[in-house]
Image (cartoon, rainbow, N blue to C red; front, top):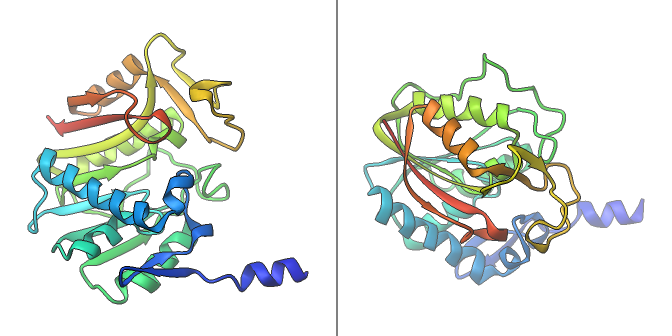
Length: 245
C-alpha cells in the first residue's frame, strides 16, 4: 500500500532547457533516453532526418505513430519549428500526458489514443482487423514517422497499418520506420534468443523479421523502398525510407 502511494505520487514531468519533459520513469526505448539532453537532442536529430530525406517543412502534415510521451513533438518545440503535427499511440497514459503538457499549450499539436490491442503497450485493446481505419481522411498526410513501432508488432497488424498509411498519405507521400530486419532468418520471430546480445523477455519486446518478407509487405501495400540502412538505429534496428507509388 505504501509503495503504491509513493508510486502514484511520483512526478510526471521534469524541466530541461525550459522544456517540459516526461519524467524518467515514463520513458521507454533504452536507458539512453533517460538522459534529458539525449532525449531532446535525439528528437532534434530525427527532425533533421525528416527534413533532409523527406523535405518536411512548415506546410507539411506529419503523422507520428507510436508517439509515446511526445519525444518528437518536444523536439519541434525545442527548435521552434512550425509544423502540423498529429501523434497517435495505443498507450492512453502517454496520450493523456501529451494532451496535458503539450497540446494544451501548443494548439498545432494534436494527439489521439487508438484503443488497439498490443500485448506490450495495450493488451486489453481492440484487435486490429479488416475494419481498422486510422482516424484521418484520405490523402491528408505528407509524412508518416514510426520509430520502434513495427519492431513490437506482429505481421498481420503491420499489414493493416501499411494499408492505412497508403490511404491517408498524399500522392508520393513518404514513410520512415524502423524494424528488426535480417537476411536468412525465419519470417517472424518474437524475442529471438541472444539476438543483438540482448535478453528479450517481455511481451513483443523484439519482433524480428526476414528482410525480404518485409520488402514484400511494403511493395504489396503500394510503397517503394527508397533507402535502407541496416542496423544503425536503437538496439540494432534498421531504417526504412519509403515513398508511396
